[in-house]
Length: 186
Image 1 (tube, rainbow, N blue to C red):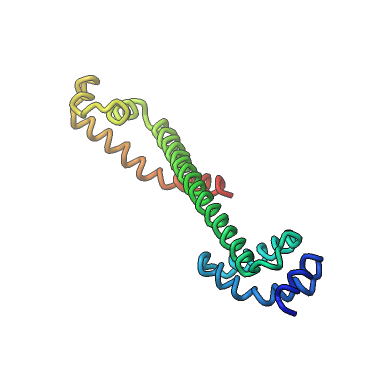
Image 2 (image 1 turned 90 degrees about the vertical axis):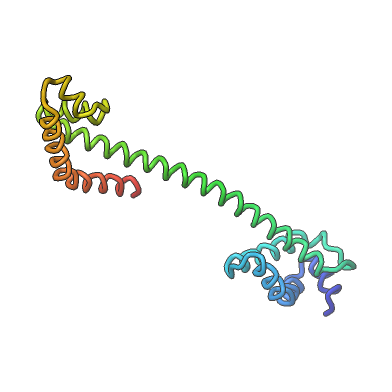
């Protein structure tokens, strides 16, 4: 059966004519889509979609015009639409992932700060005061010493004690933080 006769039969809903056209064009259409998509599954899916479109629009096919041109015009348009969707989707996925990454970083940072202050709350009052004057208020050891009437050496010793305490205790709390972060993603 020549192509024009197949197209006439296809317009009438003949499945055999459709199957024959499918078999005639599948490999060629697959190669065409693969050249642009470079993915076997995507190409095969698109070829199937194109033939579904052919079946749905079979009554509009003009048997006197080139079916090859008609088929590949549909293919070109479908490839263009798919690539455009991918580009838009990729852009928004990147944008959303960036926001999530920033927020996850903020969540981790907030949790870490909460842990640090929970640990700092456990140290003796005077030591905590010295440490916070340095870290939160940005005062130098000399300024703290003058404000509290103690030597710079005492300020240095107290801050070292706090830092040693935090180095010792923080790993235990970081395990908790890691578990919290993991549970956030579960």
